[in-house]
Length: 142
Image 1 (cartoon, rainbow, N blue to C red):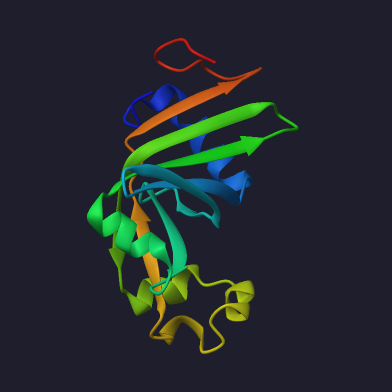
Image 2: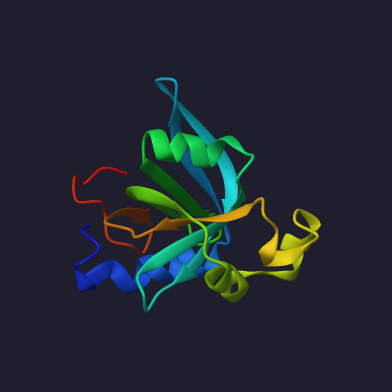
């Protein structure tokens, strides 16, 4: 579904907010690369932020090719969500302070001002949602 269609948008955001950890897929050297990340959704703004390290491969991969996919799974609800969009790497200390979680300190002991921490900014454009009680994807595939 297009993220501008209100019908299933609330269910999409509900799932994103419920399932913290998702899989981020980027492209690297002509191949796909997926890894788990924690999504920090902001429903009212229509954005998802991911806290990451500048020294990881994610920022370089996204700057080279910003097309990404986020995959969320809620096994209890049998709900599966794929978000397609383009990501941007941003350095915004104020936004980092807003989305910061105490668990992030394990990775960046100096907090959101650590010079190695950054954000991935994602504005979902296309969502494909499958589940027992959900709308099927726009292609009817599940």
